[in-house]
Length: 245
Image (cartoon, rainbow, N blue to C red; front, side, top):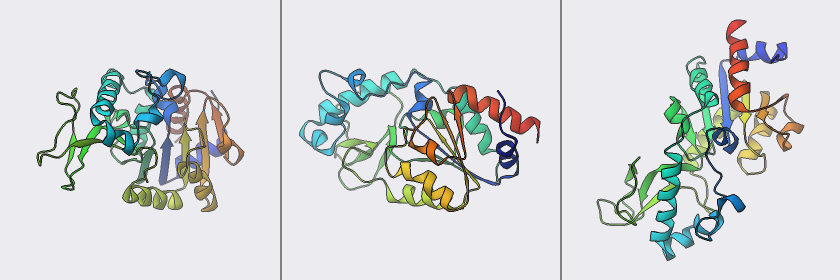
């Protein structure tokens, strides 16, 4: 697999890298999308369960669904795409990974400078105002689980109709405005504000690289679109960057 010399040279010379990942990279690890026809669970769609209204009307049902998802996700392992991203983090002075995925596979692969912009399915937070957060990788034993203060816990996920956490969003936007290269992997290019990140980066003078199995709206503005699975493209790309460095 050959790559344009300009792309390789830019990645070798860059000091500030931002990577954005979507569901495509996790699909290679066997993570289902939990949406659409394949995402039906007990006759419910994700869009019906992943809302504040669903949670407060039937928290036990919503937590049962998330616990089922956790058990599926817990069997998955990071793929070579996740692994290369974790390696890249150690090679650049300034590096940030922004992921739309809630499965925690990037952290499992060793990534540390991560903004989980849609949350993390392994985290829960208190609904009672004490702001306590819990990280739990085992199946839920009590539905719904309770905080130490006695209030219900909710999955630490950004649900439909909710705003993204402002701290993570500001950190992501600042890094994108200052980066040399933005690499967008496995995202549809339709979900905002993440879909706007390539335009923000390009307007600030960064190179935009897309990796996806098919073309997306991002392809229209990307400097390079690399078609293929992240688990194949990223290792080949990084191998060429390192070998010629």
